[in-house]
Length: 387
Image 1 (cartoon, rainbow, N blue to C red):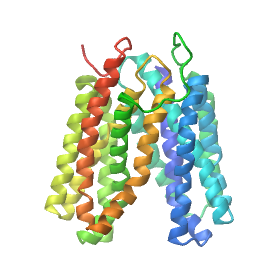
Image 2 (image 1 turned 90 degrees about the vertical axis):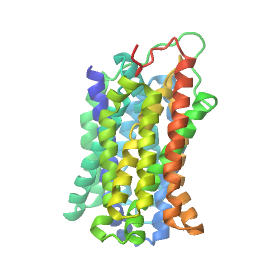
Image 3 (image 1 turned 60 degrees about the vertical axis):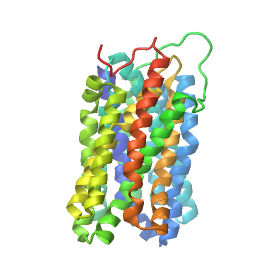
């Protein structure tokens, strides 16, 4: 199906733009002589913009369709990051990052809503492979951003070239994205409150993304400061986490097709919970790396499957996905701070025990939420369940 491959390119391009920015953060900080506190404040701006735009993007997807919403939000997302490199002070940097965050959050909702449309048209799981494309794009973007930083290419020029080239590729291809299926009866709601099954899915998304954010920010600190790893090995935990998450997402559609959504989430969450628990118990660098690798595998299919389940129903999927993704994104933001606060009260190794606990909770909640959401709309084709 042509739409699937086009949407795969959109997901990959999204990751590539984001990955390109990450290696340039030190350059922006150095250019503006920011203190760590000022940089931390600036990096809250994309999160604030995303939280604002996600519900609005869900409403736009419901009103105008996920395909047009994906086209417009990708244009906004790809055309604004170069402004980050032009900001002359902290205030304007915050504004540029906030505007870019609006595009990032809006695109996240719109492209996932289109993913549900493509998944329904195919009649089989698709979301995990789409999210794997995002991970690959992020890796490629990080490589390109590192090369640009090493060769001294200005941040604005680098991000402008990346964004506009991708837009030139994506825009003509996006005409092959699919229209959302027509709904009968009253017009679809523009916003969805997370109640019932959506609330359970939102809680699962929150728990899963707390773990993702904490693994990204604390794995290297734990390996180096608490386990005495060398600087070169300290980053291995997050590298292993990222690799297994990508592998899990590549296999996720086949697993979901064979086992169903709920069972897939339950099995993988058990792997992540037990693996991370073992790594913390052994408390050795190699064991910690293995633990983070198994945690990445356990969390790999959470977000794709939860978003797919949120899209089940007779109404437009955009508002429902926006409700669940907003809950999850809050978790991604507060996760690192939550671990830091617990570590301040006790120790970092003790605080990291929250990760296997929340992974198990995400699996149980995700299993319950997907079963409830799918069972509520039995008239809808439910992917990922073999007859």
